[in-house]
Length: 538
Ligand code: XUL
Image (cartoon, rainbow, N blue to C red; front, side, top):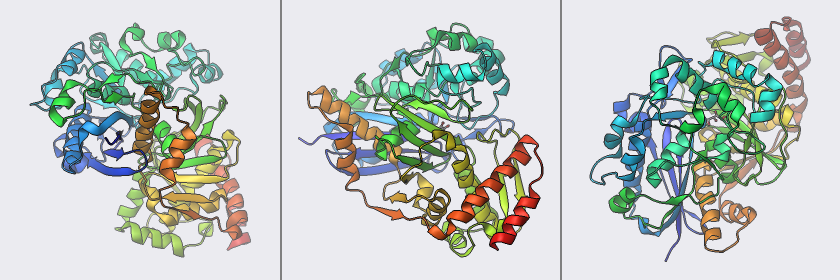
């Protein structure tokens, strides 16, 4: 009998599923929240409440998408009974607030009715704040102070407090809606919420996603009492337990067995965050390579054998699915910012790419700071787009400027990771765009690998289940063999850096840094240096 393994990715805009067998990808499906679940009225999968700082989404929409995607896979005549194990990936940090009906309801779901309908009365907060939310600055300060300042906060939790992290979000809910907080019996991450639905009981939070909460001790991988106390009262009683990302936590619930003909022995492995899953999905299981993920968020991450923290406080250290660690920086102005520029000039992606091929690296000294939304690195709360040497009207200037800005910033703010990568793996939707990847290769002066499959988070989730399943039946498997086995079949191209642009981007990075200091930290206007740069190169 065939062995199949299923990995999901509940990202900001879509739910994607990848089904693999022992060596290859069998099927890929995706449900777009905006277009396929219009009743939730989301734009890019999100709802903006009051202003761009408060960004939420609908847990019930994710659950509806789960039923839709399983129906779509079923139509491909896939025998669900062959699926040995399931895991998943979710946008990180978002929190789901549930009352004490939840567990009883998911234990006894009726296969003849939609899950979302049965869950209707389980929420103490109808919507879930997600990673794009920037509304908890006060709570970040309070938690940071209670933990003894920035260095201590980073030492304990692996990151400084960040607006989107779950701890500050939970504190805000407790402060603003104390009664609803009191009636909350469990607070899930999006990953553990989705795992709970599949397993039919409250599922644990895995160490990788747990690290993005400001609540887990990054060394011991246990809930940290000091951090819990700094966040909200009685929090320990409202959090699921923590688990290894490779634990088998039980079997799929009866609902899925009856409705889709899954085997009752199909194993469930905890869902994790999208970035940790992508670490596996791109094969980053040793040092020397990094990944740039171009999704709704842009992230830069790499594998870390031992714990090395960023005491400047811009980066994060999360646990990795291998049991080790990973470094990460994250940008809110990723795909949506690129899309905004594309749409402002009524272009499609081909036209956008064409502009990148015909405009000069260095953009004739035109520089943008693209804070269309609040930004994480550098920390910017009030969205505003700054343009130096050009204006809003010129499409070509704006297109090259936003792409150069995004990756100059990434180069600048990833320097704490210290290691110069020998190769960059690109993933996420926008990694299909070769011209964008050429700019990355040039700015980092490093080869960039572009893969045929851009869904590394869903693939990573599927590969995690392969390891857990085979080890559960006594077959030892190494990460190396698993990732190589699947990735060797994937087509890729390598985009080499163009050596003649090395110097120009080194100089431009210095100027970009000065502009960031000027705008964000009120330092001197660096116009003089920009003019000198123009004189030297153009
Ligand atoms: C990572 C982060 C984002 C989300 C989006 O820290 O906030 O990458 O996981 O999917």
